[in-house]
Structures are given as C-alpha cells and as structure tokens.
Image (cartoon, rainbow, N blue to C red; front, side, top):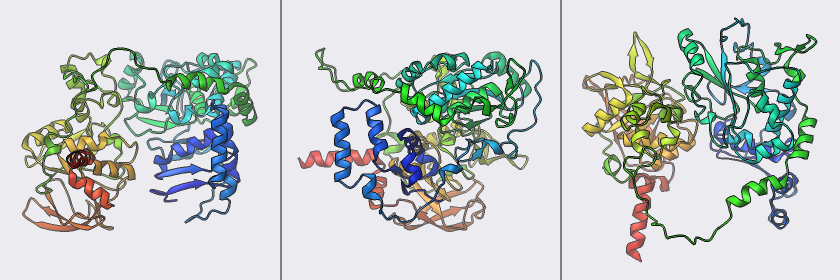
Length: 599
C-alpha cells in the first residue's frame, strides 16, 4: 500500500477488538512496512492493559481522564479525517510465515507447497532431511511480550505432549522472552514444564536467535550440514530473517508465531507441509496433524485471563525503577577507557576520517551493489567466525573462539565493528565477478590495480591511501534494522557519498547523521544504464540544499566524462546543517561550544 514514511492510525471494528499485545506487535513492526509510526486509539483495551501490567489505580484513571478531555479517546476520534483510508478484513487472516529471507515475504502456511517451500520429502533413518530445521526459537521482544502468543505456544506444547509428539533430535530449540514476567505467567499456567518437555526451556531474557546469537550447533550436526552441503533452515518468532543473519549454517530462515515455532520443532523440516502432513501417531495409531494440537482462541484467552496478573509485572518492574540513595564512595564521572577491551573502546568520532574534510572528488567505488541491500549486509549482527576479519582480529587480541560472541555485542569497540562492514558472507558486490557472474561473499576489488580481496583488506588499503570512497547501489538501500553501525562503518572506511535508486527511511537519516551524503538517481537512471563497473572515479558538484539536483560526475578509465543529475537526499534544512557540520556528533559539539562561548 506504499506506506513508507507515513503515520498510520488504525481504527474500526477490527482494531477495537485487538488486545493491547496484538496492537503493540503490529506497531512494533512498523520498520518492516516502512511507516514512521503506527498508532491505535486510546480506549478500554488500553485501560485494561494498564491494569493488567500493574499500574496504580490513580495512574490508570489519569490516563483515561486525560485522553477523554484532550480528545484522544476512541469515541472522540470517530469522525477523524485522513489523507487516505486503507481497508483490511481481520477475518481474512490465516496462519502465516515470512521467508525464506525477507520479513516482508509473507506466505500463508496453506500455500507453502504451492510456493515450492513445502512438498515431498523423504525421511532417511539416521540422516537429517532436506530443509532441516536446525534452529527453532521463540525469541524477539516483539512476540514474547505479547502474552497470547506465548500462552498459545505453551498450550500447543501441552497438547503435543499429551499425544506423545517429540522434537526432532537435530533441532536446537530455545525460549528467550523479552520480559521476566513471561516465565511467571507460564509457571502460573502450568505451561513451563510443557514447553521444557519439547526443548523450549528459558535460556535468557534478552536478544538471542533473532539477533544472530543462538550459539553453536552440536558438532555432529554441524559436520553433517557441511559434509552433505545440506539446505538447513531456522524457524523463529523474531522480526528479522535476512540471509546470513540467524546462523552461519542456516542457509535461510522463516519467521513464525511462537506456536508455529513449536510445531516446526516437531516437524523437523521446512519441507513439511505444516497444514496437511502428519506430525505423528497417537497411542491408538491415529494420525496427528497441526489442527489436532492447535489451541482455540477461547482457550488462549481464558488462560491469559487466569494466569497473567498485575503482581507479576509489579514484582519485575518496580524494583528496576526504584531509586536508591547513593551512600557509597563517589565515582569519577568520566569513564576510564581500557585500550585492550574488545567490547568498549574510546570512539574515534572526532578523529581521523570523521574529522577530515569531505572533498566529494576523486571518489572510488568501494562496492557496486544490487537492490535490497539490508543493514545486515552493511553491518551483520550474527556470530563472529574465526576466518572473518573480525574473528582474526579477536584471535590476535587473545580471545578464544568460543568467546567471540556476535558482531552486535562488540559494537562498542570500533576496531571490531569496522571489520564487520560489508562482512556478510551473502553479499553480492558487482565489482567482483567470476566467469561472468557476480561472486558471493564479503569481497571487494581494489582500484586502480583491479586486485580482488576480502572487503576488510580493501577498506584498510583505501584508509592508508586516504582515498575517498563512494558506494553505488540499487533500490531500497539500507532496509532492515536501523543499526547505527551500518552508517558508522562505511563512514569510518572513508565513504563520503552513496548514490542509490532509493533509500530506506531510517538508514538514510543515519547516513546524514554520520556525515555521509545520500544521492538518489533520477527515475530511469541506474548503475546499469550508466554502465558503472567500478573502475570509475566520481565527483559531486553543486550546492547542497534540501532535495536539490546535484551533478554526479563520472570519470571513466578511458578518459570519458559523464555528468548525471541526482537528487540530494538531504531532505530538510536541519539535515543540511547536520551534514555540513560533519554529522550529528560534530553538530552537537559545535552547538555546545557556541553556547559555552555565549555564556
């Protein structure tokens, strides 16, 4: 429906019936459909949720009174007028998944066979099947903070256990709620032991599999995947599943609701037609399918009502926000930087490349990229492998491989995080080709020599040469998580501009905040029509004003000069000011120093 950059407000009979948990899940997924914000009216559902989560009666009454007086209550907004209205029938919703590699690639579970995802597969004793689900994880703050989702998974596990169904032995399963209250209401409902029986015990209360931190596989399973070059997959209740993100040995990943995750742990392969195929036989030899263990909405709601209680939220959250008077020794307010740390290091954001003048002349392409480059391509969050640039660096720092952790956890150390720039093994840099085809991997080609190297070696070489860089890309550049290092990494590498057919909204803002100039090709013009192969150098000419037309000057290796009009994607005067300062930190420093002088 083209809602990128829009403010969405949900209303109508269907929206009114959604619980606060379901509303929050929909709103929290706004980055996946590109909206700036996704809001629901304040109504009785809001009040019920505030009570359920342990808010004081006085606070609840204040919210209701204020909303009604200020015209923000649902009844006050019945006649609100909008720029456009979209219609969606909740009764049309069926069980869905997203995959195999993009969160917006939705597919109904009933259509899996027709899409070629599910289908005929053969179970060979002693072997993992094609499409083996090696990871089944109930994870992500989005889904595990919605009580209905987690309770539904617990009830499905209970029903499966009653009928004697078990998890397949090659499936690494886990439950990582976003809140400790989840464990409390699962205990209250008697569902903790049901989930544990199928392998879904609580492993943490934080980001895990969704952010590439599921941990190592059983060595025997890992060896079989490698030896047979097996198509292995992950099924998780997270909200990101880009190729290479979830686990190095899961070639693709599918997003599913928590109960579906449990079902796939039993099925053991994504080739299993989850709506039709037989999960197993009961004690009487009767075939068991998903419909036989799926809990009803009425049962889910009844368990939520009986087991999710305000005191659980009070017990967890009130101590978190309690203020304790500091009676101990005074602590130095400035952090004592430890230079050997690989987790937190004094950042270089006022030094080196970031303190230098951006000439926007003589830029060489670091990469020429296709459409749909995600922030996972730019700055992966998954586990760090020994043979990666970051892994080699950590090994030199004395860390054993089992302590490498993930890229996401090392973002406070720029020396590790820099080595994550374009480190995704699923990257396609069109500058690197083999046999006429683009070669997959974290690869680059150093110019003018034409030497193909790993991406980090190219970045190091260009940094030593103080060579200004540019990235040429296709449409939807930077989609996915709004990860700061996706902008920091390229800037520290010396990238001064990115010319693309289009930008994801949040990532474009992050680029401006790091002093990188986003340029958008005019319709009908792209890297292919311009014949860009990476041997060129680039200049940007023109006064940088909001959405002004600038000139991208291409100097070809044969001496030819081409001038291409591009749109300056500094969209506001404020963004121009931030960019000209060198980025948001430099702009802050300028404002701070100016105010200090004035006072």
